[in-house]
Image (cartoon, rainbow, N blue to C red; front, side):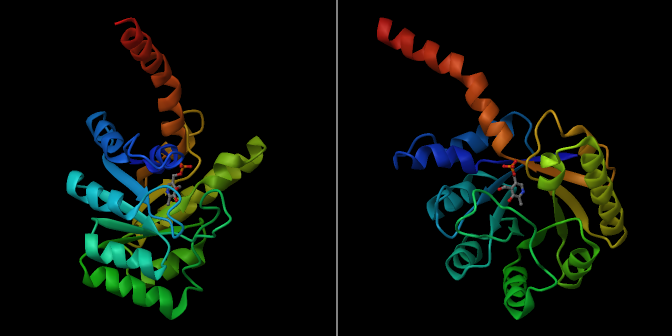
Length: 236
Ligand code: PXP
């Protein structure tokens, strides 16, 4: 199973000061050197973390770039110009803290169909970020998606063991179905080292995309080194 590391929140820390550090491209290279198989970056319509220039720099530095995006005209323009290996289409609401649900592919209409066709024409693979729902799965296959990524937020946030098991079963069922339709299966959102096991056990899932927990953990495990580095510099 491959790991895609989402580096959005490295850019979140950078944008708090609007300077050039920490650099999400540098973080992407460290992630790849440490075993990540691909890099995920979400260019949001409001540009709250990743910026257009980051996508261009990531494309130059990283072979397997998965650009997440909603089908807003300005973001689609960047994707078509930069041509990442893959685009993952996600829903987006300005007021949300993170991608809260799956994309309504079945109700996406002409706008979605046109966007997918334009991405395909540019030679970009298209993945659909959907809930584990047969209708959305069938609609994704019909639009020619190469991958479906199941939203694991409901699983990760389930409050009871029974609810969590039920969510994992639903994802497993839809993963089997997706694989039988010839789709590549990915999953992500809210995964961390404490909850990833049940998702890893689903044999059809070929890739997990994980961001917040890895960037958060990097701050914890990196804090000691960063403080030591500063104290050493002050001493010298
Ligand atoms: N996959 C997709 C399609 C996402 O939108 C996100 C969040 O940006 C992730 C994976 C990663 O989620 P998290 O940051 O919770 O690990």
